[in-house]
Amino acid sequence: MNQEVTRRHYLDAMGITAWAAKYQLPNALPTEACEWEDTTPAPTPPRERLQALLDDAPEPRRQTAKPQAPVPPSSETQTSAETIASPSAVRALLGQDKPGPVNPTAEQSVTAAEAATDKPAKPLAFSLSCVCLEGRWLVLQAGVMSVLEQQLLANLLQAVDIQPGALPEASHFTWPQMANAFAVEDPLDEAREGLAAFIAGGASRQGWQLERLLWWGELGPDQAPLDRILNVTEGQSETLALPLWQGPALASLLEGTHRKRDLWPALKTLGQQWASKCKADS
Image (cartoon, rainbow, N blue to C red; front, side, top):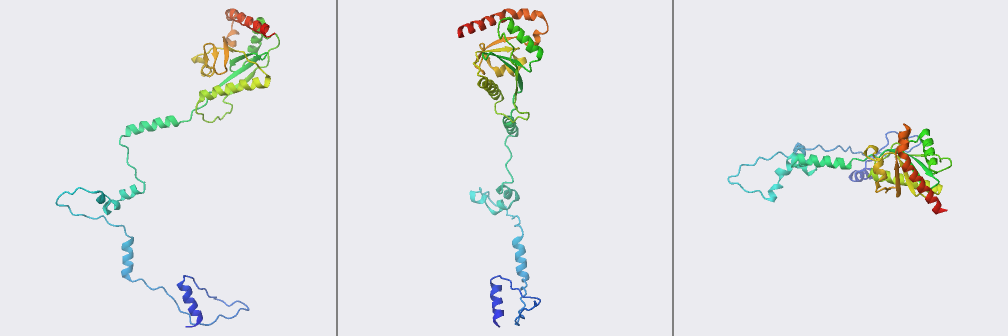
């Protein structure tokens, strides 16, 4: 056995395949001649092949003879090969089978309650029109204030010497601010915070020193959610921290003169309060 054959035996023992050139390349040295040994895999004896098949086959369920006397099962016998070999036991060990609920009705109710609790809440939708009178009194109305309503408001205020000049331009606030609003945790609190932030932003930019809130319109279940958003308690809006004066909706005053006559005493008192405040500040 020459040196090349010995080298191949070492390579085969280490699991390294030896390659030999099939064709002689140009200008290459000829392959050294040696006695190659054809190593063919030894055939597996039939007995070993049968044993391999038996090892790969699933273990059959064992048939145990009936005991003559009942023996209480112990903790060791509960983990015997019969229990582990059962398909249900294997699935249970793998976590594929879970025990069913003891009380399906109770679990269904709990699941429904959890789903209702986890369901994201939608933000409250509302819109307001805002006018500030000389940086002191804040006028609010639900929805968009029309041109006729703005002209009527200016006439009413001028009749009692409130805001003798031109009425400031009305600004409009819509909530939520984004069309595709994301889910919120507490829609009412976030709507209140949004309105308060809008008013605080206007006061910061315009230098308002707000003293009173004039709300034109009804406040009640029919005006939901504005009644809860303003959070009026004992004549004061807790959301805006301002005393509130409430008058009828401006659209209803456009329908006839009798509504204006009914409003006149309250409106005249409001004008006197405006005048007394201006005298105290001067």
